[in-house]
Length: 460
Image 1: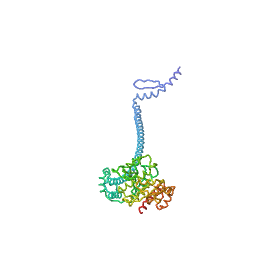
Image 2: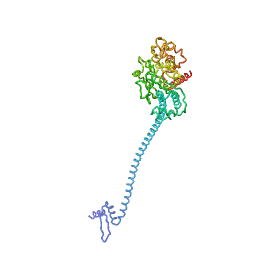
Image 3: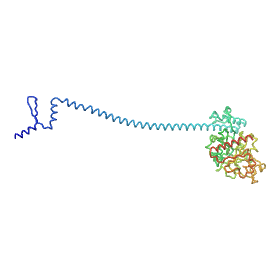
Image 4: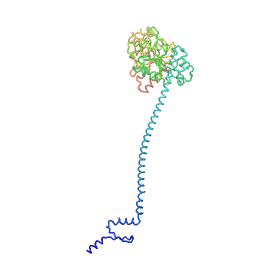
C-alpha cells in the first residue's frame, strides 16, 4: 500500500502558492500545465503582455486590406485605361478614314469644278454665238454687224467668263447691248467649221457617223477651231442632252419644190459644241419618224434639210471657213453651194466631204429640181450622172466633184466602189483615214488629217 501511494505521489506535482497566510496545493496533469502557467501570469499582473501581442496584429491586417483594395482599384483603372486606349485607337482610325474620304472628295470637287468652269465657258460661248444668229433672223442686227460681233466673241473666247451670265436670261436687245460693250482682247486661232450632217452623238445615232461628228468636233475645238453642227430636228432626238435649248422666235424660210417654206430653228450646246436644229413646218412629217434612214423619200428629206441649212447660214450672215458635209445624205450641199450660194456672202467658204458610208444615193435627175438645181446642167458624166446608170444622177459623185477635198474613211477600201473613174479624175482631192478610231493615237492622226485638209482647201 505504501508503494502504491508513493507511485501516485510521484505523478503528482506539488504547486505551492504563497499568497496570503495559507498555502494551497494543486495537483495538475501535464496537459494543463501550460495554460495554467499563462493563467498564473495573468493573475500576477502580466495582462499587458498579452494585450500588446494582440494589438500588434491589428494595423498589419488593416494595412494588408488597404493594399488589396488599392491593387483592385489599380486593376480596374488599368482595365478602364485599356478600354479607353482601344476606343481612342479606333477613333483615330475613323478620323483618318474620314480625313482620307474628305481629301478624296475635295479632289473630286476640284476636278468637277474645273469641268464645270470649262463647260460653263463653252456653253456661254455658244449661247452668245447662237443668240447672234437669232438677232439676225429677227432683224435686230444686220449681217455686217452680226459678223463683227461673232468675230468679237470668237477672239475673246479665252476671257468669255467675263460676260455676265444673267444677261443671257434677258431678251435679245439686252444681250446685244452687252455685246456692244464687250471688249476686244484676245485673237482666236483656227478655222470656223460647220458640219451639215444627219447624226451626232448623243442626240441621234444610226451608225459610226454620230460618234465621229462629236469626237472630231471636240478635238478640233480643243485645237482652237470654232466648230458647230447643223442637224434635222428629229422627233426621236434626246433633247435632255442639249444645254440651253431654245427656239429662235422667227421663221426661217428655205426653198423647196418651187416655193419658200418656213422652218422652226432651235439651238443649244452639246458636249461644248454649238448645235442648230432645223424643223420643217409644212413638211413636218419628214423627220417625225421612227428611223433616221431607210425611207423611199430619203432624198427628198435630206435635200430639203441641206437646202434649209444653206439658207439658214446665208441669212444668219455666217461666214464659215469650211462647210463639212458627210455621205450622200448631205453631199448635195456641194452642187448647191457652188451653183446657188457662193455669191451670198460665202465667197471665202470651202467644202470638205467625208465618206463613211459608200451608199451612193441614186435618184432620177428631175429630183434635183426639188432643191433648186438644174437637172440639165448636172446630168453630165463629168458632174452628177452615174458612171454605170446614165439615167440616174449619183448624189455622192456630185459631192466628190463639187468638194474641195474628200476624206474617205475606210479600213478595207481604197476608194468608193462604182466611183473609180471619178476618183481617178479627182485624185488630188483625196485623203484617206482609218474607219474605226479605237485608240487615242488614231484619233489624233484623224484630227491632224482633217486639220491638214482644212488648211489646204483654204489656200485654194
